[in-house]
Length: 94
Image 1 (tube, rainbow, N blue to C red):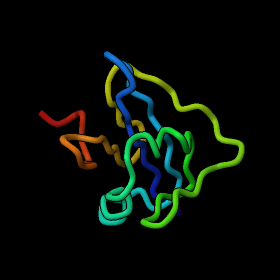
Image 2 (tube, rainbow, N blue to C red; image 1 turned 180 degrees about the horizontal axis):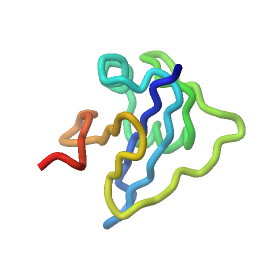
Image 3 (cartoon, rainbow, N blue to C red; image 1 turned 120 degrees about the vertical axis):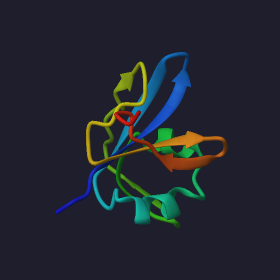
Image 4 (cartoon, one colour; image 1 turned 90 degrees about the vertical axis):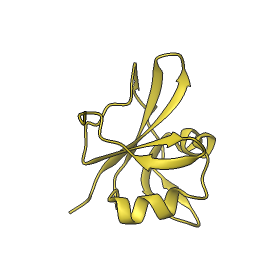
């Protein structure tokens, strides 16, 4: 079974691209794997099988990520770039 996730990248005022990640989206893996990648790297992949420390394994051909007005968790986990680092966020939390 896959732990699916999304990576939300701010691309404009009230515009967030939500890049799909199919495998290993759980925080213990993703936060370490994402550490070397910048938001531009994630946007370039467009749709991801798995993020690893040494590679972003993307789908071929990738689909364009949906753009939403705010980071929105639709899958198990949601990650955003905040103050120069990737963090997991729960948009439902108070």
